[in-house]
Amino acid sequence: MSAVPTESEGLRALASRLTVPLPRKTNLLRELRDDLDALTGELIAKGLDPHEASRRATIALVPDDITVQRLEAMHSTRYRRVTARLDTVRLRRLERGLMAAALAVVTVAGGLMLAPVGVTRDPSPFLWPVTVLGLLMVAACLAKGFELWIKGDHEKPRRGLTAIVVLGFSVVALGAVGALIDSIVLFEQLSMGPDHAGRLLLDGVRREATLLAVSLVLAMPGAVFWLVSHQWIAYVEDAHRRVFTPESPLP
Amino acid sequence: MTDENFDVQGFARDIHVLLVLATLRNGPKHGYQIALDVETDSNGLFQFRHGTLYPILHRLEAEGFIDGSWSKEGGGRRKKVYALTAGGRAHLEGRRAHVGEVVSRLLHLISGPGEAPA
Image (cartoon, each protein chain N blue to C red):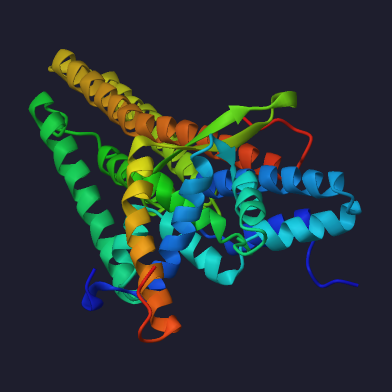
């Protein structure tokens, strides 16, 4: 019995060895699969039995370890090529630094946009926890986006998406609960019949509206990011799966 | 060509590149067809084994010497087809003289002194 794998075994083994981004891996495997099918067919037409034809096509076309290394160097992301010489610890520090800097830029930009509107003037006590949760969600989105589209690490593409959903939901939920509690406190104050009831009511409504608006504005990019990344992952995973189902047309 | 800039390993790599480009001179082909034609046209002398063809194809595509495109086949399936570009054709013509000179010098060397190069 021959130790050389047949076509589908060769494809699966190659898929597990290649660590390039999933869309590039899919294209490589798709090209190889079509060539394997065609060469096998041609060898069968020349009189070889199907198993032997598949075996020979695999020897000719499925890359060995050295060729896989060449393909990886060629098809890895620009980020991976640039950082290839850095050791893991230094690279991790650099990535964390980049994430922190990106989050700081987003925070400052958001602060500069919101400050003139008077969001932080006499705020609800819930505004700061909502903001912190929102920033955590933005950080999670930045980290995931970096992993998916800059680093090209698609080993576990869905990892972290649930955390984004939970954080986004928490931001909105805390904003809504905060507005509700603020309203109860406001109505209690109003029920005492203070002299400045009108002013108290206006300030209270503004505070609660601000809290709700900030929580929605913070949650919105998380929802959009989740939707886009979820759809993108579903698309590339589907295309990748189709490589191993010979009868299905590829997108 | 001077002795300082001649790289034997580079020349061997160059041969594979030229084989691919020369095969595509006759028209666009799929990866496996390129491998098959190189083997057939050289009576089995040159072979691409263990997928060594793909890094060459992808590098040539990145350098603009060949153009890879997905063509629709029967049953909704697609195949990647490579075609020689004008740049690839020029590269092939340019390297032909270089290969000729290397082969000529090699023949002169192994034929021994007294014999003129071919």
